[in-house]
Length: 143
Image (tube, rainbow, N blue to C red; front, side, top):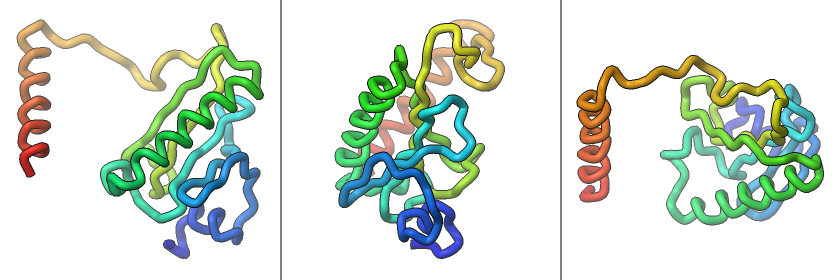
């Protein structure tokens, strides 16, 4: 636990939050500044800054809880779906791994991603980027 981390303080009960899910590994609570009502944050109870820091042993329970939370948010909020997102460092307002689960409805005003999107210059550039990522995946799998 990091004493200055807002989410660690929520987990410790030092800060109030509207908790909607809790087990031995994770806690989920309503976002205090939601995109839509029902917007939740799922956090591991142990402080990890990013998804890459999460130990493999916690990946399954963490994402099982994410799936459960998605179903619960859809059902309880009469949503047509959910938007699920994780920021790693950039745009991460609290440096503690968290998954956003946001209820969605068609024509709710949320437009895809929250930033401009663009196409690759051409198929060659797209393949070049894909190969760079594939090479990094191969290297990391061999580590």
